[in-house]
Image 1: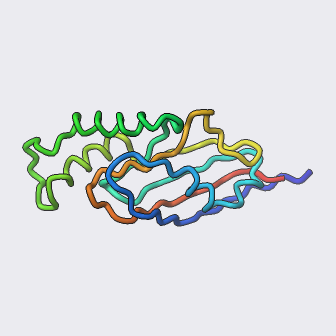
Image 2: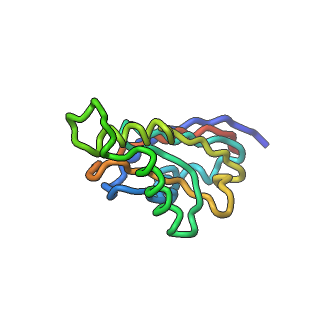
Image 3: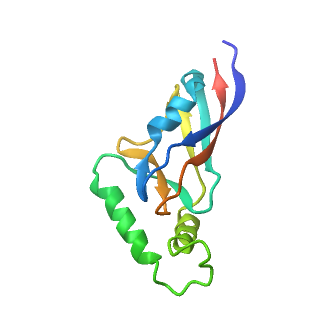
Length: 145
């Protein structure tokens, strides 16, 4: 059997989401159909924004994203005396939250599937009240065959 190392990269534009934590695993999977042919690999998901972030967390209980949003609002409240305020009261707290969670996630691949745990999903963390569409870069690397 011949094993080949392949790389691919896709740009994914997500629809606008309201402020909060939103499961996007399905969006990511639909954007990378060649995942099915990867036997061993890695998917890197990067968000091209500074006021939204990515994380992996529980995908089953709807209370989890609600509690995450509430917790992060308490950690980085809008009424904190920020200096950077020219883009509105939700902007600087969004930057703080995005810095805490990060701009990317990497997920191992085995036999054509993401190696997410049973209760794990990929979340877009929208930290602005009206963030708009968000752009992701999906970089897939792995062996096929």
